[in-house]
Length: 137
Image 1 (tube, rainbow, N blue to C red):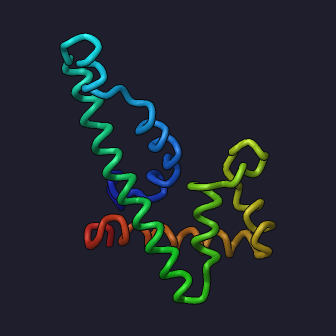
Image 2 (image 1 turned 45 degrees about the horizontal axis):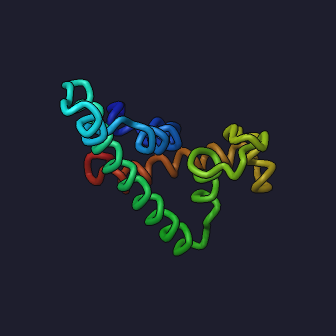
């Protein structure tokens, strides 16, 4: 079984929240400038923010690489599905950012739900390698 730290589905599921954390986390430098001291909690948040920024930048690069690979294979649908489901739902299924269900994605891409499930499963495996290299195999 894949370790939690290599669970690409979970990372993608939280993509927009990771981005929000990066934008909104308290930074030790801001805190220091305000109060002239930095608590261990603020340092921990700052370190987590830096780790998250690094991981998300790596996610973005892996997703860009996956897009190119899908285009080279002549099948951009798996990339487009993953983007709509997790990363950039373009307003979401409800127009307010709610992620698309597999049924809604099947309608959107004019295919069966089984095709969506197969594409997602294959995409998770490929992205796990693009994210984590040999450790994702």
